[in-house]
Length: 226
Image (cartoon, rainbow, N blue to C red; front, side):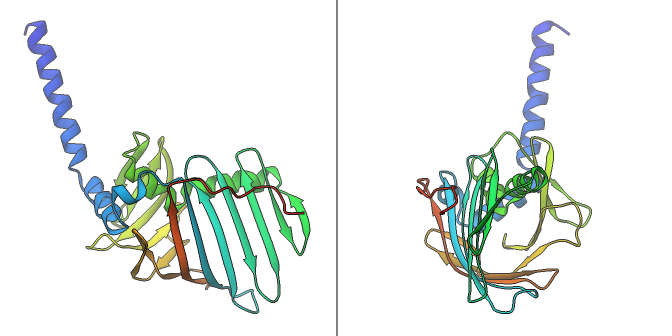
């Protein structure tokens, strides 16, 4: 075989591999998920997600309002929790983080900070953002249980069960299928769709009040308010 023919055969093989990957079952499932949550146009340019929800936790005497901001470009997360019993807040960036309870601020330990950074990477918001941007670092696979598995730069970042319509029904950030969040049906919030409620394996439940996918980064500080 001449050099030209060898090169042509190699290019054809690469094209076949690429087309097979693009049309593979994991890719199709990822497209279904993205479409169900609002589509590429709704998520591609999102800089941050801001939501508020009512939370019910077995260890909390009363329900509480949780408000948080998740930033898509690099690790940055801010959470506020309020009810009659408590007033909490926490925030972190790639450099470090802190938590505040009833006005007392404590810096994250190195272990806590590392766990929070991994939690940021495993977020469902991050997965949808990577899907919408066709990230070359994102790889999808089908797990043994039929779940859609996500890998970012070959690091496992979670799994998701998705129904026929593309709606996520269960999501987990670790390989264990015993640690998960289970979702109710989707509701429309502006130009996106998101689960209106859900629960986890411990008995914690949430009811979404509002959610915004922001194309501009909000000017909220990650410094303690005191």
